[in-house]
Image (cartoon, rainbow over all chains, first blue to last red):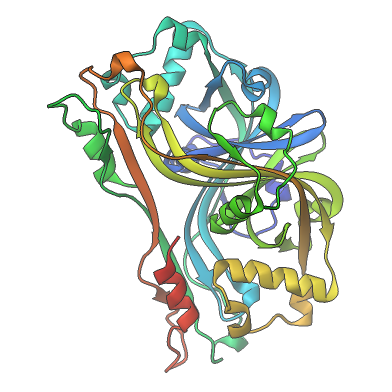
Length: 218
Length: 218
């Protein structure tokens, strides 16, 4: 089983939830997150920006407007921290102290490089696939001008840690017979009915891969 | 209408989505986010950590184990960046270039201070209320030992920007008559049926504020 190098994050984390370093777990958490939060330093200050992402192997793709300072700097090799988090439930213990959340998270470290040419198109395709698999081939492909106005950054991940909490409340033995309710409020994310654009050309129906995405859920 | 000072973030952001600086919008986005992502600098590297948060006025509360380096450093006055993001839908335009997401996000800047005594308890109560309003009074209150093993940091926000994207795909005029489907896949987050702890004392039913939280949704 391929494993990631453990990041410095692992020593910073405050909770005793189970840590994972295998590619399978880390990639599945990255792929099921709709967005990531990208941390970087600018002018000596920390910044965190939500971004849509795609993935191929150990590389995460980000995109943005050419004018973006984030993408400009991120592509210049500076160190980045990427966090991917899905919340699965609220854990209410009998004590406030043991109350928590069920979640799956990855914190990854790497540096960015700006993509050009066919690599850039591949990066954009990976991002598009993360929204709806196969959408790239079905939508209108980018023009030369659109490609020029877009920056695509590949972040090669060299350290990553997944943390996962599942299950019920872990109350203290002496609280078990107390008068307090305890349990989990599971959370679900789902698609509602799609809303087609009002100005669709007559006869253009919803493509199969879009319906599949809706049915597939998370 | 009370407004936040615009953060440097506003100049970094690459998308033309509408920016908001009023307290009402910013606080509602902070409150509806289940977690936040906290960015900080340690050893010259950027870190991003997912955290449960509470809020009171312009102050955001974070907590963690005493041993946590994040909480230790965050409470020492260093500059932090907090991001709160809710994704509301996938926007599929006719062109990949105009495809996007509907979302509500806040990026806020401030510095942290460690809380002690009654302030610390108030901070923990704010975090508990963000999980389930009124839960603090209903759960077993923390012991002296538990309080000692927990760090609570208050982040006083001095700059914040909300960005919101809503609505459908914004396709180019010349694509409108093309053969491509376009529309929005709205996303919903909801609670599933609560799962009570198996070892609950007989007769302990689900409290009203917990059912209210489940019904209230997001």
